[in-house]
Image (cartoon, rainbow, N blue to C red; front, side, top):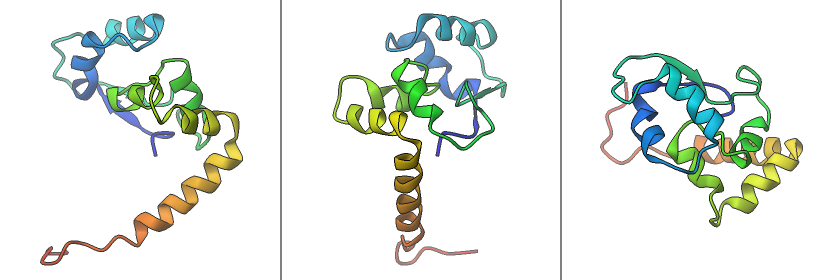
Length: 118
């Protein structure tokens, strides 16, 4: 779902200044507009290549260590999700297919018993 959207500076700036698993030039670009003490709502695209297009470039960004959020960067950081990220980066069709399947599954999730729906 992060292929389209924006993140607010105050939601990622702490990790930006702590983490090392981020492309240095990308980090410098973010830091120039998002100081460590930022509490504002300045917005940054989650997908830096095609921010308004639903595609697989988000995964290509992760391989280049250009994930906006820490939760994105850990998806391609020497762990078990690396192969999935690489698969989606290499095949937009595979990403589209799996995304569709996932959305159907999420649509079938029922609210917990006793949840008040409005």
